[in-house]
Length: 250
Length: 250
DNA sequence: CGTAGACTTGAGAGTCATCAACGTAAGTGG
DNA sequence: CCACTTACGTTGATGACTCTCAAGTCTACG
Image 1 (cartoon, each protein chain N blue to C red):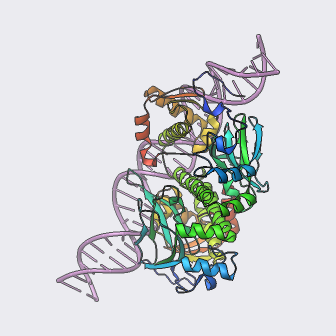
Image 2 (cartoon, chains in turn brown, purple, green, blue):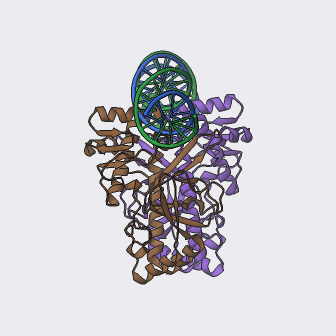
Image 3 (cartoon, helix red, strand yellow):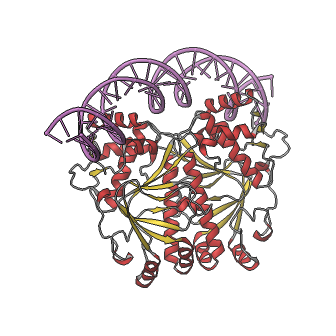
């Protein structure tokens, strides 16, 4: 387990509503159910295989695992990552409740990355063959799957750009902030579920650089940061720092 | 127009089969028709609105344009790119025949990037609402759309890693090589449709760096390059240079 | 033939990585 | 309860890769 500083809202560590059906799930608007009516929702619900809890360090899937299901994060958080031939780890994304995991495995039908819980976390597993059939019958489901994949595409592309360490970290914080807001948590104050090393591997920086930029941001009055507890003091200025990137993150 | 050196196979500049139906299209196996039977293929075919030719510099769509269709490249090549608030251009990808364009626009329902022809090029436009309906009725089509989106996701993620200029350029060449092979062209000898500047913006390098690495590769006997004509002399060694990246590119 | 744009090559500078040391927090076992 | 261990995070010094700036070359095309 990690540092548990007492910051008011720590969304990444909250596990609420574990037993809820899609219909009453608080992630309704972010996740696959979005836009579905009562009956269709029930049909989706019968597909869902709720799994977990996974504890920090547990793997949801690993590179090479046969692709069977798409996962929707239900509570907690996961990171997806690969390890290259030199042993360097590349973090592909951090996944909060409502996010889908495993989409890149559809094409090759086996997983291309690892997914690891950062917290005590749970997922809804959706068997892909069944989901595919159901999405043939429910246009709203099809639409939403495409929307979410499309969003992933755009987000990943954003990160692929050529930006400075400050732009990257600012965009990372701003992106987390909006995602917390979407989920009903404070956009100004939160705990990071991931280590400095994970952030660095995600942003393609050295952990030392992440530390230093955090320190610089704090000195400049942009944020307060103590270990994993972060408070955004000047969101507008953070946003202007990363406006070149267009904003968000995964 | 660009340099037209006489290299045997110059796939990016070939425009063949402009009038073919999906059924007889040579891109059959790469593009949406893959796996579809005769009747389903005909239905897909009725959706297709063939457009072009676009000439070098022509735009297929621009940032902010309303999203109406997905495009499948039919002949020639396109680049997709954005311009950030500092005026820097970021190339998101190069698109060869059989590739889909515009997928990232589904979510926000307007285009997030620009798409420009690098050559004299044509596309098949597929109205998204109709495609969505049809994909509800033809599971094979649904499967293939998902497969192609999934592939895009994986490719983009690859480029997002932290790699040296040599790794990037080697991966770029190796990736192009395999894509040409898939399309029936020589994987060892081809013309680049894009400028050094485009390559640099794609790989997040300076154009000068691209030049220098090309020169270094040539000095080391890995390639021969004269302006846009490229010959890969030592594919295995190029592959080993970028094995850290896992290989391919978009 | 001359200009424009693409490309190449060289020199210097800057950002960020690497190496290293140190501080802090949490867990273990005596 | 304290020494020890381990992982994480911070801070400093050095250096490398790549960018920027600048000049020069080549090709295409008017």
